[in-house]
Length: 128
Image (cartoon, rainbow, N blue to C red; front, side):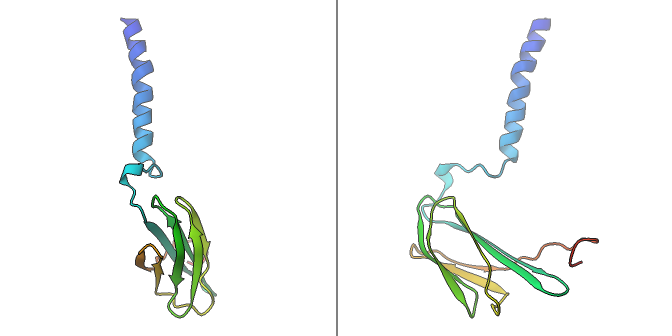
């Protein structure tokens, strides 16, 4: 009887932990769910008392490389020549850029308009 309990503990506990890890790990993506061409955009605008910090990160979440990825800031733009699958590219919008939204296009038909997000301000944090 004691052997069965120990056997169950040795088998069940690792299975439960593995299941919890897989369900909570949002970095795991299954290749069958990926599109051929896909892009994730994180546009952040953090307004401080003296300045505004902005950054844009584009990540190729598709199966194929993206070419000539154009990031249009409104009155200014820049182009990333090649973005391989799974790779990210950090960008800093140039001074004088429109900080409302960005439009990202590519040769493969990507056309995404994204508004900047602003982080929550918390007491004691810089810029609060």
